[in-house]
Length: 153
Image (cartoon, rainbow, N blue to C red; front, side, top):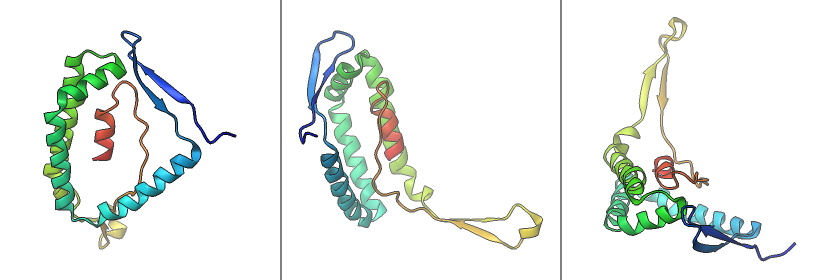
């Protein structure tokens, strides 16, 4: 077994031109990246929700500012027209981020509900929300940005 993984060439499906050469990660490298992500999650999770939302909103601003460069990269990776990338990927991603920035505090509030059955009429259920921790997302080729944004924010 080799410690060196092969490179993967990405190509523009519309033109066939090369976009990038990406070295695949070895199993050991993936384990190391996941370990670092878990360490970072501890720091991120310790931040107050308001601070995490502030940082998410700042990222939204950067994405908006650089939307054309970002759209060009996604266009080359997917073969989609730039207008479609801007509308279906970037604008929708920006809208999702804005939605979560505006509504997450309310969405994360604990909820208490009553039982729906007569036998348990005096019982209450309280739902609280905890972070999942480190997650991996395999993004589909046809919506490589918008779908993961919805899952991760």
